[in-house]
Image (cartoon, rainbow, N blue to C red; front, top):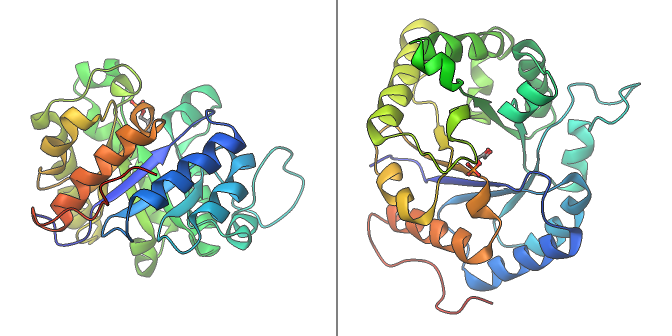
Amino acid sequence: MNPTPPILIANWKMNLTVDEGHRFVSGLTAAMDVPATWVGIAPMAVAMDACIKAAAGSGIKIGAQNCHWEISGAYTGELSASILKEMGAGFALVGHSERRSLFLENSQEVAKRALGAVKAGLTAAFCIGETLQERESGTTLSILKEQLTPLLSLLGSADRDKIVLAYEPVWAIGTGVVATLDQIEETHSAIAAWLLTEHGWHSPSILYGGSVKPDNYAAILSLPSVHGALVGGASLKLESFLELLNISEHQAKDNGTPQLKLSVG
Ligand code: 13P
């Protein structure tokens, strides 16, 4: 059992309209008391404001799917972390594999984005993950270290608690192929051991992402090196997200009474 509350983050990617997002978050707040779980939702940027309003007072954090490191400037199409903070965001995802592979963001840029988020007062959910080819060729850990190294050189140790790591094997994202429990635990514990021995980073929070669903989440969350999940597909429907949250609340309360009210609003 992990000592810190579990973290559950929804990455809606380019899905759910402003209205749908607002309805989802309103339904979520109606269905729960303030959760013990650290709950984050990352809608499309244009839906953030509606979601922030719907989440007011609920303890749910609304976050961005990316952010830039500069406060302002000639960066067409980018989002400033300080503006996100000003509008009421709580966190930003950075380095999602879709950003890395489709939009060619490299690890140096991703580290700068994370630092921009942290400097603006946001939590950064820093995504790392290997491709299938990299896993099959036995280079998983060296790829993950490469993805993390620029972050470690930019980030002061006092700011480490503003970073949540998310291990998302690329081959498990949106494929329905979830990594095995052994693969998840082995990878998370290897990252944590490396961060501790080489960088003096004690107890980083590491989420797992990749085809997390209500029927596999309890087992994943019970792994000692897993602190929560970053969820795509199963976060798009309120019912399945509530099931994930319920699993998380059970763990947060050490199998005590779930926090959720009975009705889904
Ligand atoms: P899925 O849960 O749909 O596999 O997506 C995972 C993900 O990319 C979350 O960031």
